[in-house]
Image 1 (tube, one colour):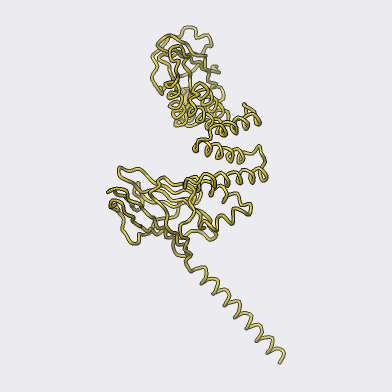
Image 2 (image 1 turned 180 degrees about the vertical axis):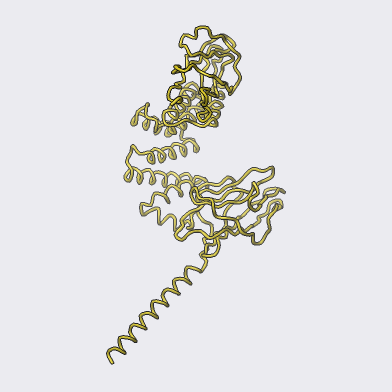
Length: 395
């Protein structure tokens, strides 16, 4: 009798476990819909994510499109150039499977109307908290994107942010900045900076990024003095020679430019570039951007007759340093001519005409350690001498 009782008990436990398993499975399979999810950044204020439906079989993202005029949005399927793409971090394997309530092609906008389009992606992994989606084309092909879409509504995200959850704090700060609620944006960005300070320390890269968010917010809302003060204090604390302050310097350059302090803007942008070069080789696009920013400040200076041209950057395309030949892209704002030499005194070097963002190919001698550049403008004002260390490029 005891054995029968034990057997019945065991069967009951198995049945309960199986029932729990199937209930859990069924619960997991039931779609979860988040209305108006929190979005950190978006490329257009006329495009919003209306809802996200998540289940084991698919992820459905519904876009809300506010049409201010008669235009069109293109939504196409892979592998087209304008295809929608969902990703988590750097993972980009969540394929667009279908469209609901519309079809691939152009969604025509009627003036002063709202349109909806739902797109079906592959299912996201369990416990996914955020994703990004980008692609499509508007008008002549400009892309749109949604960065860091939380699978939580605003109330849920705020509750998690209050429990010292730094990721939700930064997302909410960016969300409210996008919504022009700058008071709440500052509240959450300050909260994020405090959390990162406790967790990573004031000398961490993450904390510097948090401070830079605050500086950028103050810049965007016109608190220029606060933005300048935070930036200068951060640089003073970490030291001007610390390459980690590079992004802070970039934003500080923006602050000076807005304030009309163009001389300081120029020197700060160039300092940013030098710090980036200490950390790792910047991309050509970064040199080009700094070149344009410095060119704008030069053009805005009142005293333009006696200024000295500044070499904003010299770029080595490292992978192409082959066979002893170096390829350089040279940015020198205000320059009309340049000299290049392997000798610091430029013995035997002649002035040559300089063109903006000039590509130069040079094959240095085997024992050459540095290449020197000198610039001048049309009034014969000469720059400092700039050097490029190529010794480590030869290794």
